[in-house]
Amino acid sequence: MLSFICSVYDIYGKDQIFSTDYNHWTRRDVDKLWKWAWAYKDATTLAERRQIFDTYGMQWSLFWLLEYWDPTRMLVINAMHCILEGIVHYHCRHVLCLDSSAPKVSSNCLKVMFDWPWIPYSPEAAGPSSLLHKKHIAAVVKIQETLCISLSGKNSLSLEKMWMRLNNQSTKGPLNFVVHSLGLPEELVNIDQAITSLYIARAKAKSTRKDKAKDQLSFPHGQPATTKHHLIALLLNWRLQQPHSSEAYIIPTGTADTLAFIQKVIQEIIKPAHIPSVPKNFGEAKAGSVKANKWQWLSTLHLPVALVILWGDNDGIAPLADESEAGYLLNALDHTMALFQATAIACRYVTTEN
Image 1 (spheres, rainbow, N blue to C red):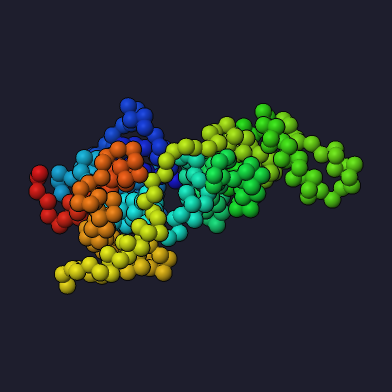
Image 2 (spheres, rainbow, N blue to C red; image 1 turned 30 degrees about the vertical axis):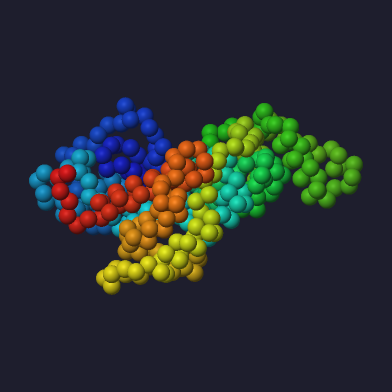
């Protein structure tokens, strides 16, 4: 099945999500889109509709009753899912780390070394040799996250612990997909000595052979990567070729004190009666899932008040926009407020031409 990831251009498959070669993109033909949308509407069986959707990525929409409708040039904003439960949620939870669990998986525990343009799992990206059962797909992301952790410095993993982590969090299938998605060779060639030594040490530790036989264990240089440990060796060999640590400064936006102050603002703020309440324990697991309506008011009222006081006020004046911690937090505040302002505009029921 083709995965249509863009309503404007003919870009297919999740492996194209990171494609930036826009000079070679081609705009979708609106006449053909109109044709297949009406064909979908007029189809008499579910199989016909599924065939049209899988092949052309089209379904029926009432917008096609408008003679001027052109989905390659016009946009309908899904404020609830795309903006409030999408962008705003992601920014607050994963960028600002306003989540009590965030420090446990990022800077306060294991330092993420770098971002890599990982290819998410899809049948198209996997190919026939790397297809996964649904229950194993989640392990792909865990492997990719582990490979981004620092190998040296504070809050890092040793090579051995990274091996153990990969071994414990996945079966062979997801490991094979990540190897495939990175375009790594299928044979164990040019493997770093640190990897081969670790492979042999682990093999000896698990071997039930006698002492002399254990000494004869060796790394299978040049052999096809057919086992789980072969695949881990390939992935760690790739990881050693990437930067081992980072001196990048991590802005302390998601501290316990910050979250506590936001909760205090939520509890003490005086608001008009028509504004609904939001979770007083915002950021904690007990608060449950925050719905779109709550995100709308959090981003309109509570978070701007709290964050401006925390990051935008230095005894009545704004902090200097320099490379100090206060300067970085002010920059984070500016980006956050720009997003919140755009969110308020996008969620309006009526907009003007301007």
